[in-house]
Image (cartoon, rainbow, N blue to C red; front, side, top):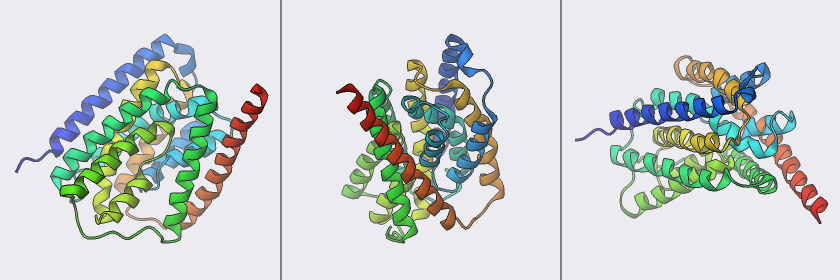
Length: 291
């Protein structure tokens, strides 16, 4: 039987190299914005991408920190997240896609569809003005906090024993993965929604990890290419996220087997909810000013 994993990983390597090439060109055109990547942002990348590798996701907590610390303008947060997370998340996929049993056909179908969704979503979001970005990010944070709360309260189903999908269930999973790819351009991390939906459809949650990590690894560089071309990102902070995120991913992937994450998730929920409120309040204030 044909094994798509080498093809998927080889394609991921090419996509990542293409992303790095586009980022390099963008950096040459906007050289000053990449000077002096802040140490604080590198520490943020180290921590959030460490836990991203463990399945928590880095979009919501990183966005919350950016918002609370006023580290990145609201309209540049989605692009900064995508550009700064692309290389570390690609490393996650290389570390995990071949390590966990999953149906190969399901993997081969869902991963490229997730990337296609990311391309379609970024094409719209990278051109949006400040207020829609604020509203989208605020709603995205509320969605992320909701999924974290459901996980903490054990409302998310434990899933079945399947390691893949067939028939109508496979079609449903494919559509969902495409949509999750598109929503990532608004800053909605795909890990928690993927675990929820795939578990409801009967998949062993463990088998969801290669799919969601492989999908994200394709989605994020694809989304990052769009934002890099548009110049809608903070170059210095994105570079810092990459610098800090790479060792975070490697440590989590190769040294850590399990951690008690429940308390951390509750803390993240509180921070994310406040950041979502602040984001939507800022959008409302801009609306009032424009009236």
